[in-house]
Length: 402
Image 1 (cartoon, one colour):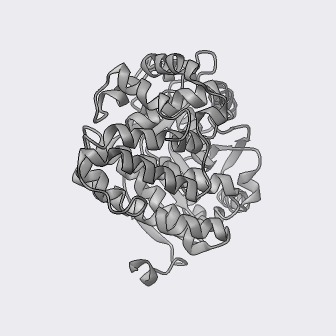
Image 2 (image 1 turned 90 degrees about the horizontal axis):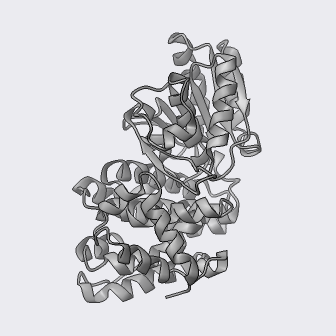
């Protein structure tokens, strides 16, 4: 109940590696951010966004005014789609270079920010391409400054060093992680999130839950990533139904945004493993598949696999959505079923077969897990080992309901 003592209309400054302005009305801080950029000699920026949300939410009105008030020129690349690809990044980089942009402002969910982080690197390495960046052909050590204005409560990318972009030609969806792409500033304003569709409201918060389940159970998990995980799942369990029932509920959006932000910090420390490693091939093959939905499809089977290896952690952190679990390997099936029941309770009932995948696709998907750059590193820190049998079993158990 501690949440009741928080004034959600009071903008807080939260410091991770990024300075985050958090709370209802935080978008107004873009004026202060623009001043800092101009004081650093940044007089031109590229704004990365999707086609509609940056304007429909009202965020653009504040950003455009702040840029104009501080004499900062801009170009807008407004073609970023969910599951952004290397073509988006290359096209945006060319636009930014031709304009002379010295920083990146991303407005949207994880996709504009991840694409924006990639552009920020390529502006410092103008001879390189997005394909080279995501094939790990070079190791960047610098990027132009990044500002992330977050419009969803799921990704966490506004506070960490990760970015994900798809190579369509190879069906690869790798992740990069470099210190140079921590955003300088981020804005998490719940009033910008009330226009999320009912499906996206569900999917992005399920993304946050997956972040922390993985960060709390990986081979590099720490007390920090575990304690953050416990709080994130508690907040999502409490406030996601409220946001579903009333999309304009600012208190619900506030705590879901806080949960997502903490989720980003949690996996910045504890990293990710099976659920994300196995989802990336799904949405690489089918870019129309929402990332959060792909994760939801896989989560029960991942819990079934890893419960025996982390029973104490999982029994504790999953309590808000799977109460009464025993910290014993024998409770793995029940844990998986309770998590599936929770997903069903928020009306996310799809499995792989509903998205056009069959048992016959398991081999190809498993091959992609082991051939996509970076995903092998996630599998290597999974709590149940990096064997092909582990990956295949998770996929097979996700084709249809448990």
